[in-house]
Length: 293
Ligand code: AMP
Image (cartoon, rainbow, N blue to C red):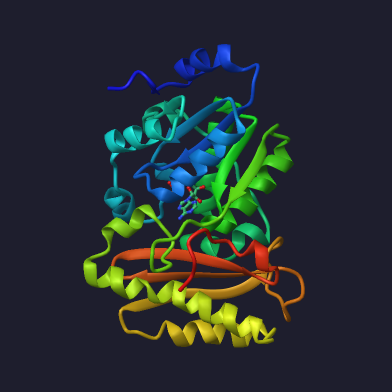
């Protein structure tokens, strides 16, 4: 086992104490690292003296026990990749370290930003789980900057709200979605797709691209743009849960696209649930490092 792994908050504090004079960058993950995570680690590496990665499959943010059980766990490979990316420390606590007996506190971000989209489909407890674990991780690491992916756009909005509301002294940095060669957003869940399902999943980024093209051709009606996406997703192997166009800040539905809008979707492919999004309205905000097809 690598000496760079610490398992307890107490050990983390000891390891970080001598490094506190300079900037600490933090990348929280659930492991099964892929290029998307590595892009966050590289950004953290270039902007901070010390980089901490956490790997913790947070049970409280999973609605379905089967999804939690099936979530890939590849710690050894993760640590090797993270070391290649030049990180300094891996914090990989057990569930009992994060939620010891008697644990009774929930950080719950209210309002439209958690009621809607993932909050509506995965239930309130999802973002309660996310906010609580992110708060605990930020308090444990006390980083100067924490890095999150635009792929989980609603998560970024929720984490920013929580950090602002609780006055947690950290800068939340959102980084673009890293995409595979065919435009599919990289996700730890992609490894659970069969070859057939993986091929079908490529329709998802194509549907987002179609909406971007429609937007570029002048269509501003969110319903029409959502229909463009839905029309692309009509293969029988894909089950869209939602396709919505919302204000990028408030996540509230919008009548017509003026300010930057978030086109966001969740689609089931077999047993796997995938999410993706793009920004409409500001060209250079389009959240992608790989290109959409
Ligand atoms: P996860 O391990 O899936 O919970 O993700 C950990 C962090 O990596 C979150 O901030 C995600 O938004 C981010 N992330 C996941 N997939 C990607 C991706 N394809 N591109 C950029 N960031 C990502």
